[in-house]
Length: 190
Image 1 (cartoon, one colour):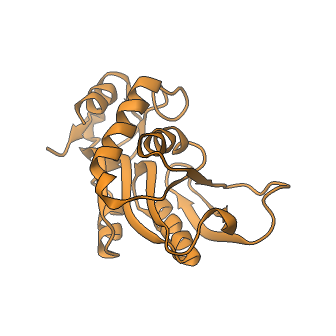
Image 2 (cartoon, rainbow, N blue to C red):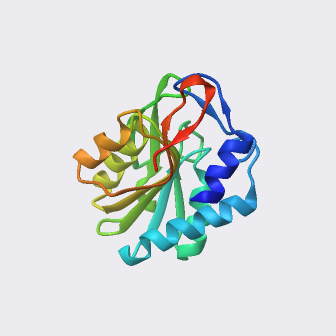
């Protein structure tokens, strides 16, 4: 997606050969026009899958996932990383390691929000090692639902996430695939 690549080049910041900071438009300050385009693109790529719900992790995945759900005219459900007073019973959970935050946490979705047989699309902001998507996929399986695809805004293709997901048989669609962050430069997979 050329608009996204342009935004990454102009406003992204390479912090190391492993970390790209995109908080100017994706995961701190959000560019709503770009999110609309991202939602439209994911909807175009997955429209043939007859999706019932979009799921993501809080918080950075919410904006692109919401716009995708809006375009597909389906609900969005996000997995919570922190317990709350209202999220207590009948939970679907998975342990997820965050590459960016370097912590493992338990994520949860209320079982009442995912039903057996539903067709689910995961949308997330980044793909590095694939742990977030694999955790969400485990929750989808617990519900008896069917994961029909995974939409990633920015994939770090030099890390093993895509391979891990594809080895499980999942369809992965990434809007920007980064080949390298070496030399403080963003290089895309073409």
